[in-house]
Length: 295
Image (tube, rainbow, N blue to C red; front, side, top):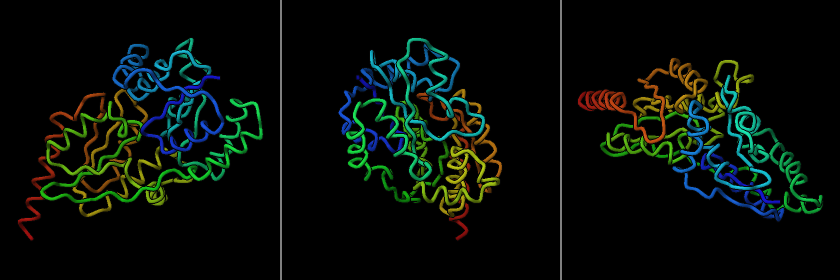
């Protein structure tokens, strides 16, 4: 069986799934096109959908002929049909796709990753013994990579927190323009996708109805609350993927609860924030200069 593995840069468990599938002995293949070309393919097929969905679809199409494609299922926000069921919705919108299998990503319930891995292993490999052996060998990677709090200050730069889904912020083809724009404006950007998830979800416990909230909402709220509580962070930029109404609404709700200057942007591939981001940067830098003069 030939299997395509879409190793999204936004997924925290890519290393686990790659190691597990190698231990299973399945024939793995990756997209045959770069991300720019894959995005163009996805945009052509689903021009009205969120840019993150277009990128995922383009990567599937770039696999060529495979029996199945494994796709990381990142945390979804409330009302986000694509985030909740990407692998189910894509075949309904576009015929001829291979079987799409969702791979759970952090955070997961205890044992969920291994349970789903066992189910996928039995589907892809004929031997239960080999599945058990592969599970044992890949288990050390099941917790995902460890992350430390990134630096919150940088000389001569005002610090800004950037809050958005990992599927946007961690994909260079989507977020490179924003990152370059923040750098050119002499802002020290601290990205929500770089924060330790344990601290993010601990902070998310303060969220209203946290126990019933979607993991995507909790991740975004926890990151915003964590960075918003740091005195070094002068303001928060909330970034939603272009044409993603559910994420835009979720970020708008979170931004309204913050006690620092905020900016909400819808970002398409290659965009950098434009005059809105420049005006916001000037506001933060002016405020920082006033505070420094008064000290």
